[in-house]
Image (cartoon, rainbow, N blue to C red):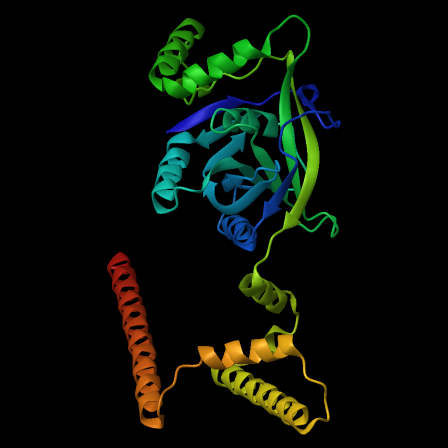
Length: 340
């Protein structure tokens, strides 16, 4: 079920820095979030110019938000209005909470260079989903290579005599009770006269009046990598992707490096024993710990363990190939039935 957000005028969004716009100090984004955003942008409909989605993570004690995952949320922008599939967003949030209860909704993302006026409406909706939501933008057009990904926090302020809290309460009531919003919309449609394909026939999410503004303030953003992610990102950033090593070449390179390290370590130990190199107690402790971690296996035991591991890998590869063939066969049969 989609919710209707009426787009504000350009003067309802301010891009000026606002002191105290939120308690969020900075944002730390993991690589999987960037990949999910790019994937959703590639898979978007042809009529869409950008995509939006929900950010999952947690808030650190120092005020920084760590974004660990994300999922796309269907939406549509046309004729100055924004339609967001609220039910889909909440269903995905519930599923993500079952998989990882530690990750909660911390904000939302969109593709594009910076914020646009309609972002104020979507940000207002996420204000009811979490406290101080973070808005992350990813420039998929590479307009500015130095600012491809940026983070923002927003704050709703009242202008004039209108109270922003009343608008927030109305929006919260509409989200909690969409049926009442539908009845109000139907009544308004009856008063104005029924029109085919009227936007009034769809459920609406009330937003702040023209006297409410949303101030967006840019905050610091860093990409948080662990060791494995850093290796993957470095390979992807390398433009010579056609020269990537195969599995056998990678295994051969790893074994060669391991042999070189063992040779250098053995040479160091021999020099220390012969008195040519002064000994280092800390290095000795590291070597002792490394040797203690190696399991004591005979040649026959090692060959059996290694063979069992190889058999397990081959079994997984066989099952993956069988599944792939089944999917290809099903796709061919479905295509053939459509042609008939």
